[in-house]
Length: 79
Image (cartoon, rainbow, N blue to C red; front, side, top):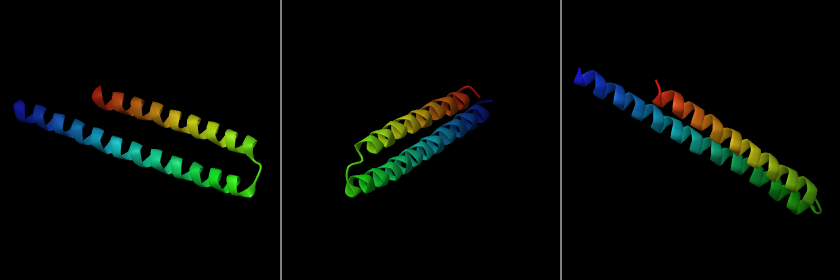
């Protein structure tokens, strides 16, 4: 009984670690993509409205990513 329980705990731990790595990677990619677009707009001149819009989109996308992460994490923990 104990070895199966231990194996299950290790499997859950590994899935959580993989999920965290995936989350960090996706978060980093989103930030890079928006940073690049915002820097390009800043270089091109007066685009404060567009920059504000991009920042808002980035915040929303990161929020959705976080919600998805929490949902997937709860599925793993409750499996």
